[in-house]
Length: 362
Image (cartoon, rainbow, N blue to C red; front, side, top):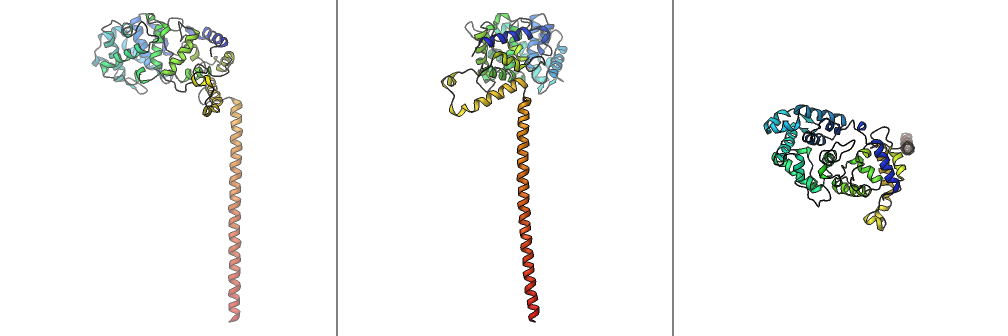
């Protein structure tokens, strides 16, 4: 449910964190170094495609690629496929190889040649009646992947596979929007058509805010969350993406305080939920919502101190119970061994008595 408290809290968060000085550390910062839109779109493609893993490694890898290119648009125009393979032969970012980076850049070169730029290539797949960029994004990925036979590997995801395509939607956000954070350059696409770049962190926050009930961070969930944000800001539904991503990342961004300001009382009810909870799920919902709030507030693997203390006491009680069980088992075993020992002693006594009687008879 979209409430007045939620709108106000989102706008306050946006005013606080949607500033140029808040960008670092983020691969987005590289785009501001390239005023020419044709250079910037290539930088955005490189930076967004490598935006996975630790942020320090991401920045290092993006810098490595850009340093080898110099002026990106001119570099691609003059480079053949074999030249790109030589240039990025020793490159590696986690499980992304230099061959994959060369395939991505060669695909971008070939896709832009008939149109003059990547923007024109993207717009060729965008229909006037398209509500979102989903179909255009699928066509864009196909055009870049085709020249290399799909050898872009880990760098390009396709919406056709159901993926949330977080990095590609991040690429579009950087280029289509223009404000203090996003440098723009692709404004003709229209910010109203953008889809939120959905990852696990944003998914947990949006579940806590009641913007989705879905458990999977896929494209269907991304569209559902975008639709909810469109009710708040129809012309720019992903306006709050950057500021929301600061929650739990910056030390001065307190997620728990933000959720309290939003007056989060429960997830939005849609579909079956509007007719009441399914009996098999009713008991699980309070636990699930509580877990989502804790993860969004404290990060994965962290829980509040009071609950941690409670769980510690519970574990100590369980440990104490286990100790008592072990002691009881030892006592039973000891009693059993004592009983066997007494039985053996009595048997030896009886045997000795019989032997003495036999000797006396002789």
